[in-house]
Length: 107
Length: 107
Image 1 (cartoon, chains in turn cyan, brown):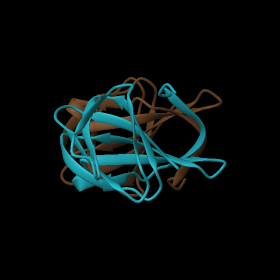
Image 2 (spheres, chains in turn yellow, red; image 1 turned 180 degrees about the horizontal axis):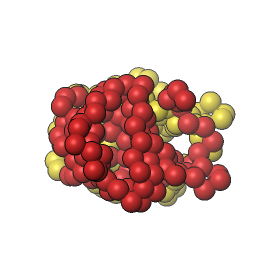
Image 3 (tube, chains in turn yellow, cyan; image 1 turned 180 degrees about the vertical axis):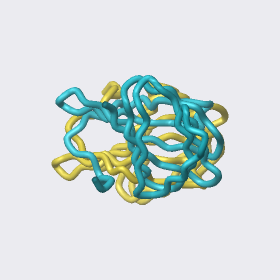
Image 4 (cartoon, each protein chain N blue to C red; image 1 turned 30 degrees about the horizontal axis):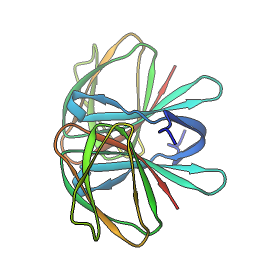
């Protein structure tokens, strides 16, 4: 499934989610059917995120390295690529330079 | 007019606008009637922005100082406050600490 260039017919929460002193931020996109996505940006650094529901992470721009809990290897993802994280898990994500922009979908 | 907590029924462009090496970023919210808003964040620093159409800047979170072209004084704005910039003008905006989050409306 190609990564969308825009998300239609949503409500956007004006207050951003701010993590790691602003090095990771995202805005919530609320769909009418109750589904939620987040559109975010990651600055250089290494971060750990936990998951409740499974997550699909689409890389909108930039690149990152990801290691999902239980895996030994890091995987690299760039613009247009996608990775999946199981629910009730966690992943490490590292950005070496520039900004990594992502669209996160849940469930 | 109070600052909205969410913007409904919009399309959101996934690719962020990135300015000043990522210290200022925003996402475009496209309304069905053609109107556009941007939802953005400003990191500490001092920046200059030009305007084409007049702009209404709502401070969603944080605070900033602003000097609009032609004015000598800086004005401070915090969460919940709004400033207006004429079209075909420019403004200096400075954030001392933390993140300043804004909603920009045009016209």
